Image 1: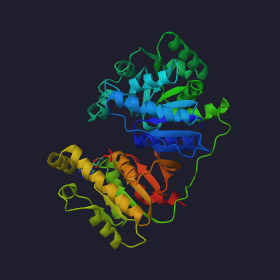
Image 2: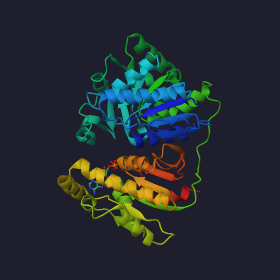
Image 3: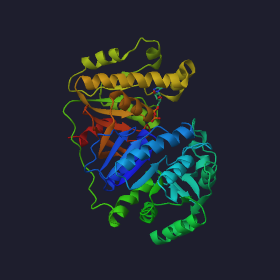
Image 4: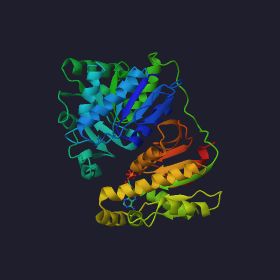
Length: 422
Ligand code: ADP
């Protein structure tokens, strides 16, 4: 095992694992710290998914260092700290504090911070992060409920979180390619700047940066920056060969279902398309769940009444004004919690009754379902749509899971995803 990765949330971890797989590393993802008995033969990269994006910085450091210990014990020689491509964090952390703690633990003098992901519209120019051409602080991230991003200059954002100075490798150096970028790293390091923001506007830039990072023990960034690492590691002889990504994945025999707890625009459209295509659909009313009149048993009895060949869909996805009304009555956290808990219970019942193929829509929802099923590790299969692969559990419960971040996937995602399963 070469590359040990620590991701600050679950669907972000899957996104990174998919990128590494696509670029030729055999990758496994764990939900939380890896178990000691995890089989890592034939694995090049291990991605540990934490839930540390918005917890207090001291806790994020503690969890990330615990993950680093496991990765070191598993034989990792290179490390990756993955966060969101919109640099989701507050002035209190957690990107800077975790990066500094990892540098210290790994006895490394320098790393980069590069959340650029051109394929999804995230680029960095002169240290400023743009989201689909709009400066970060003017994008919808400005009003994010947990991590409002009010400054587009990542050097300033990061500096408010770190103990040390923050450096910068600008576009002009990046454009000249790996050798110049490497020189720029040396320049920043000798000026006493342990972390440098690196400009990147294209995948070609990311690949050159990847090459320049080959000797860095720690790289930090979004999943975009991982695009150049596998080839660079292979060229440097750190791994013997790259492995072509799987085109299909074998799923255990059994029935399929969709569980959607995301209210994002893309998911709502996918739910609508699935209903129009005739998938039997059960709508969860959070108020009924909260007052106890709707339980996982009710949902499961409905599923049992559907044709054995059908793909039932259970969804709570709803329009913003309805979600808001529910949140006003139940409180945001409680509303989220009751729905997540119900969907996790439904997932448990389904897997107990011969369902082996599940699509789960929503980041938090996916976390709740994966925890509910007790799935600790996942193998990464083929990409269904950008950022969303099929995965297969590596635990006593054998299931194929597609964990979809709310806004990912084409409108026909719930209909077409099944075709890449064998
Ligand atoms: P996304 O990836 O789209 O952000 P998440 O699953 O991360 O989706 O978050 C959606 C949150 O909204 C979850 O906590 C979920 O339980 C909650 N939720 C789902 N449906 C409703 C609803 N109808 N009303 C209120 N909250 C809901």
